[in-house]
Length: 74
Image 1 (tube, one colour):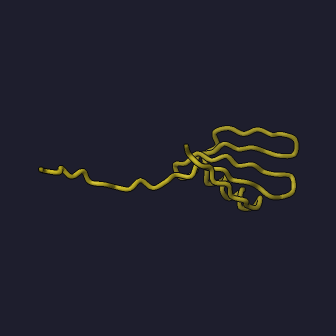
Image 2: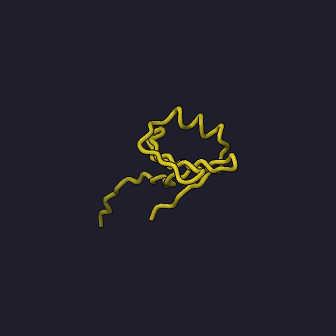
Image 3: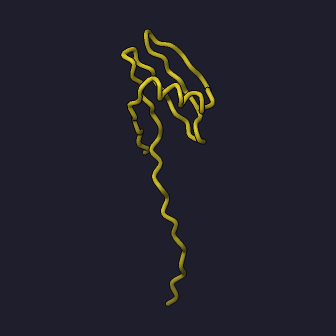
């Protein structure tokens, strides 16, 4: 199962992130705004909170270990 990475950012940082991203979908919920974006080839969900803060949510991708297949001869 994939893990989620949550980053707390300021609205200024969120604004910069949104200008560098491709917006897929957005909606407002009360005083908060939710943005589904593509940034650097990754899907992210950005949530702008009413207190001037924001949260960026993305999947935490584990690095795959490159392994060679070695035939064992008996």
